[in-house]
Image (tube, rainbow, N blue to C red; front, side, top):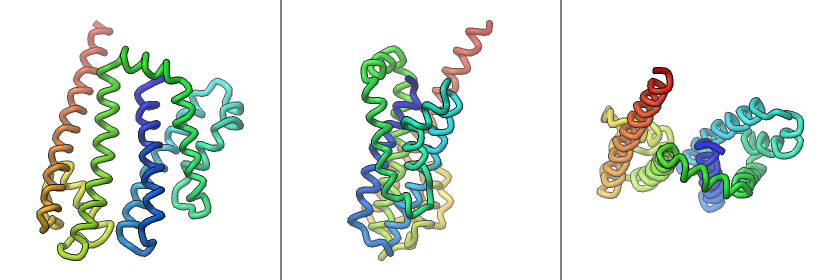
Length: 207
């Protein structure tokens, strides 16, 4: 059990909700394309998780023939034929929930690390929701009109760079921008704190 297991479980739940949302959005809309971009990012994360588990598994063939192949299929991006097979991500959730006692024990023993994992998940979730929301409210009235515009806006906003070529003009869009900026500051603050804590712990062990 590790922080990555917690993050993967939360992202699996979020990705299933995200894919479910596609059923209610026109396939030719920019919002649909944006969600596909985020699903591609999630696929890369899940592919990395699959490869990590495969490498770390003592019996690689057993892992692959039991649940590994489901993880692999649900992690393949940009292949339309595998789009709905991604629902198998739910098995990631079930596998971790089966070890719920270990999960609770890990969280209680590693509160700090678990908190950082939760911060990472919240930051990603807020990023996805904010980017999708700002595109939805701005696409007909502002200069954020495509999925690529929204992705670039969210990147420069959450990093607080403020490049300024894409910006919201509606009050709702400005509110979303404010939330994303605060999220970016909190995330980078938490990241620096985590790195500092790990460095101090490593230094103490080797001193």
